Image 1 (spheres, rainbow, N blue to C red):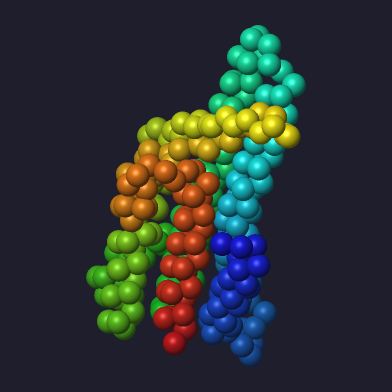
Image 2: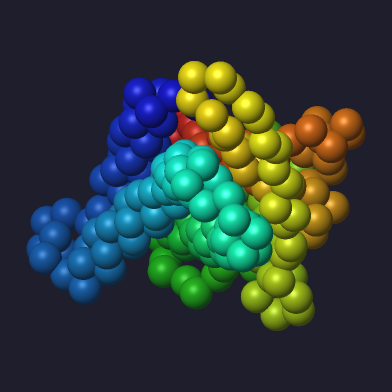
Length: 249
């Protein structure tokens, strides 16, 4: 997605969240109340988490461009054998930095749905809760949270397709093992610019195993960590927009 598209989608989602916030406000004597303060704090938390998702996706793009420029310079200025060892080590370091950022994008994306669960529960029950997304889905299917059947079908569909795998993947890399990416790279020669190196880290293994749709896209193993980040951002925004639009109808 282009930067302009991301800005427009962010603006739309923040507008949708604000609209839901206003629908839940208490007026009159209760306008200045702990309830409304907590509601606005929840809205701010959602805005913050959305900013974090987009920041980390953009930072991954920035870092890969910076890394490739830096590594090109190093390749052309340090061709002695002892420097090549250092150079190859730096490629691995850059891949690790990208993984740090990708992990944070995953954490923020999953947390955003946990925050949304609190706003949705409030919308349906008029009460604050400590429900995360998983608990919200359980309760809404048990009918302890009232919900129209069409909306329930949509929530379950989006949960199974994207939100549940996202939450499971977050849990995997927090509680079990780090995900791994190979520092794939190609070196090219140009008569005018000299040697150039393209760092193109592979898709993290656990991520690909968790998201079947993405695994199908990467069946030829040509996609990269950068592609995984872009796919994660697009699917996060798509899912949020789809659900909030249906709830707001």
